[in-house]
Length: 201
Image 1 (cartoon, rainbow, N blue to C red):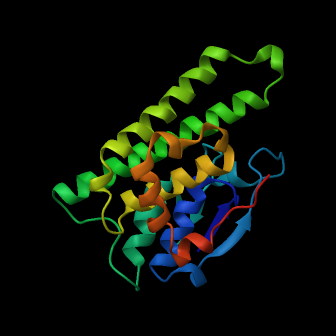
Image 2: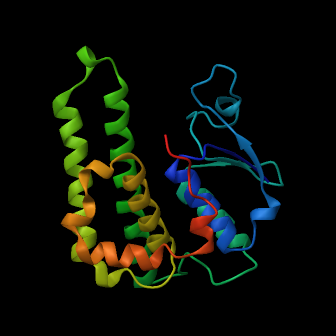
């Protein structure tokens, strides 16, 4: 398998953490990719031009991190499946994944807006993304008792909070969510987390 990736993408990190948790990391060829470069091949594989993009051993191209994560989970040879098979546990895990992914989306959009020329930036757009991030943290704090075990939901939440630390530590999310902060410290104490820490900057 070949994964087109960037180390700082939280969505790539999800795929990589799933690969490590399920014993697949050695089967994946990592291809560092700048999707903004005119030389990137990603748009020829993924019409959305985004990462992660995974080319399977059968030549199938998969994109969007939830799809890639579930595919890798289905191939896993180590540990327990991260995607519950059915019932309330599955919907809870998928819901947690959705709020974590949405928080990352908002964080990235807010960052990209800040990188635009100052005269083109929209303060209202930036604030909209900040509020989405804040509401997501508030929800996770309120539902911290539901963040149990290792599932695609809890893994995604760990990654999202780590991304806030990477890009938006000025928000001090721990001040708003002390119980979530305790949970994060415990949940991030995993080898897969340490092996996928992105570079700062």
